Image (cartoon, rainbow, N blue to C red; front, side, top):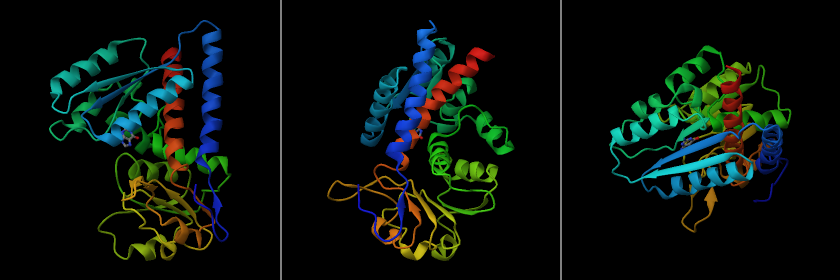
Amino acid sequence: MPAVSEGARLLDGKSASRALLSQVSRAVAELTASGAPPPKLAVVLAGDDPASQVYTARKTKIAIETGLLSERLTFPADVSESVLLGEIERLNANPTVHGVLIQLPLPAHLSTARILAAVDPAKDVDGFHPLNLGRLLAGDLPPALPCTPSGMMTLLNSYDIPLAGRHAVIVGRSTIVGKPMALLLLHANATVTLCHSKTRDLPAVCRQADILVAAVGSAGLITADYVQPGAVVLDVGINRSADGRLTGDADFESACRNAGWITPVPGGVGPMTIAALMANTLALYRASRSS
Ligand code: GUN
């Protein structure tokens, strides 16, 4: 973990994720002790993207360590859409499965929209089904919210970072992170600006942020020049540098000169995403048993 310079304090995702995972694990232990079947997460991976292989293996491993059941279903890069849709149908119909995750990105020949829409909304552990995205937009939050934004909100809450009335600036408008994060921050009464590749004078917009979320996949983009003194910086980037190290979308040392709080990479947002996924699986399990 990099050293924090100047006055920036670390938002420690490792520690906050351990706290969330131990809550989930205790709840699962209580369920199983009472004779109930454990929640189960199914992870679907199509193709051989190396990062997706690592992420999905980590998701199933942590699920099992948390006391959940988990299964990883892998398909070759040339899998047909009908085969994948058939598998999703089987998972939808399987009462022992409570959460279904389709790892993104999917191979280019598959329609991401059609595949995500095929997942039973009640088992949509990522909150990517159009029905659940619509509920998020309407402010009627579904039990499972997109994991990275949800993990970031948990991290902000665990450090008692106030959000109401604060200006949050998000860099990156993906459906996985930027757009749902904008909606969650809006739901928490922040004033939200969503930036993207066409935004004019990005550093000036970012300098207005009390909370700055960097989710563009551009290593080291966010330097001190983008950060208002005292701002909270959440770094979603996971970029592999030439020497094999993981770096974020922030230039950590430079951003620390102005940030009040900052997430490291690794050990910041990443662990929160996985812990949020486990909490989502438990939430869908509970929702399935109360309906
Ligand atoms: N690919 C990158 N991030 C995510 C995520 O949060 N969920 C899924 N399913 N795929 C991803």
